[in-house]
Amino acid sequence: MNTKSKIALSLGLLLAPLALLAKSPEAEYVESYHGRTDIPVPVSVVMPEVAGRFAGKQVVLEFVVDTAGKPTSITSTSPGVDAELLASVQTAVAQWHFAPALVDGKPVARKVVLPVNIVDEIGNSSRFVALN
Image 1 (cartoon, rainbow, N blue to C red):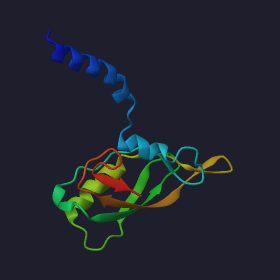
Image 2: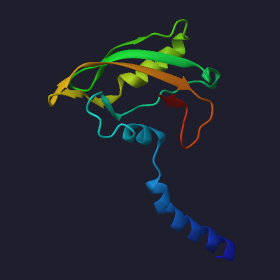
Image 3: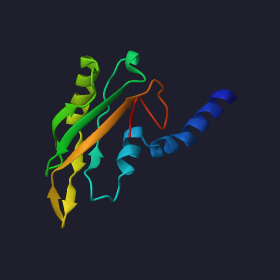
C-alpha cells in the first residue's frame, strides 16, 4: 500500500465516527421541537420527493393531528398549486407521526398550518424542502 493510500485510509477511519454523529435535516427539524407539549410535535417526518422545477414554490397545508399523533384531513390553502407538487407534499405529510398536544396531561387533537417551501439546493441545513 503506497503512502497516499495509507493516508486516505487513515483519514477515512478517523472521519467515519464523525459522519455517524451528523444529523439529517429531518432529525434536526424533529429535534427543534423537543420538549414542547402545547402543540403537536413531529416525531418522525418524511420529506416529499419533488421535481427541481418546483424550486421556489410554497405549499401551505392545513391538517388536524389527532390524539394518536396522526395527521388527518390534510388540505391545501395554496391557491393554484400544481397538482403533482401538492400530491407529493400531501403524501409525505400523511406519513408523519406527531406527539399530540397535551392539555392537563391528556392528548388533544389540534389543527396545524404547515408552510412547505421547496428549495433547490441540497445542503446540511436544508435539503429539498424547508419546513417553517
